[in-house]
Length: 227
Image (cartoon, rainbow, N blue to C red):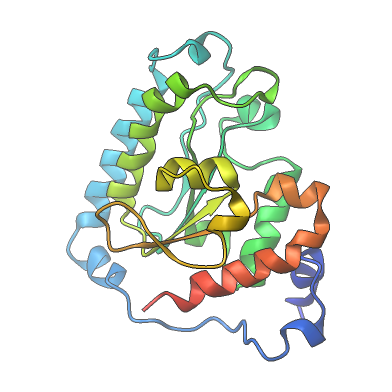
């Protein structure tokens, strides 16, 4: 029985669309193996925990007055993949975890479509606190919160970064281009060696399922960049 099919169907894909593109899990050589052996994973876990405690007590912007829980991030500290979204929603604000609502279910399908699970990746948002009524983040909120994300990237040291949605892409790339202009090609992220790929946010895909096939293309592009 093909257990992979339901995830691909959730992504709006059929066999004829992806038959020529293998989604079998491939063993790529990875510096993460040394990461495990030399003990740096343990140090990274500790540093992420320290950073998470700092975020829990953050009062740098007004969002601390309206938040339920800080949504720091989740996943493997040794992840090769890092997925970045915009900000927590209502359900994330309640649970303190990123992507746990309907968009989270779709994100899980996106990951499974390329033979990944949430345990294989690290997931975070630009903002760690929910803007009231899911409004767009203010510039001051981004300036105060973005250093947490950049530190997470420094600690996890992903080999590929996937920016989900226009907002995350523009913040990470310091760009005012729209999503259509940014997706479809790899970008350099800061001074790291990790390429960055832009794709649609799962929440957008719930509203516009026709874009799922383009998201699939973006995920395949990201996967092809792993060395």
